[in-house]
Length: 332
Image (tube, rainbow, N blue to C red; front, side):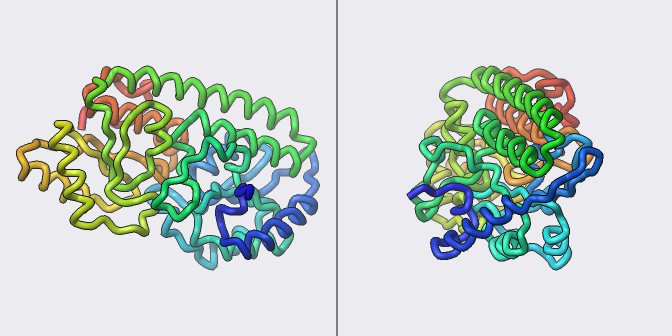
């Protein structure tokens, strides 16, 4: 069974209906004039950033979920639904990330709205499918910049469908943005490789960094599961305490969208077992940084994460990250 973008927001029966509706929506896409801006709503900041970069000044792009918002738990408000219904098109991540938005996305598609999952071009063979995630794919693909480039290509192609006169602009902007993402990936690979091999263990609040770990050869352990709806138990904490002590890991990480309570319990348990563990820094997992900051962009959030992880685990990191733009370049 081909589990493409539609499998990301609905169970099997809803998928059939959604596939039909989205197909109709794509055929009914608005025909934009060359000097008219199209209105686009994205679900997460990462998706919105990609759409904004490719669209340039040909579209008004807004995101429903801002800094510090957990997409696993997010429920759209009446205002959000109105924004979806009034937009020319909707872009979402897919792969069950926005699970609680299923009804809203189906409603938008039912109205004839073009609704696109940016992960639809990523080959299933390259997607991670953790056993504990009930047969679904891990949605955190933006943690691997090389995979996120495929999402940018989807954005480019769908914008061309929506606004054919803007094709040259969309292709040029996508080429520039993908090059920036590729440069970021090269920086990440270089900096993360400076961490001693035995220290390449990334312990975080929830399991959002598996694509990151696979790409850069790090062992990744989340206290909670793929979705923050899962709860960590005493056994989970103790298992990680044992890992920290055995591997002599000195730093663990909190996340901007997840409570730090479990991480603090982990640190206390490790110290009680004789291992001194500190918080290596706060990582951006399911949301970007504050609007208007470098960390409030996709490039900035990944730069921040890579720089923070490498520094805390003993790597060689340039001040201010890849481009010297990070607002907090000091050691945690």
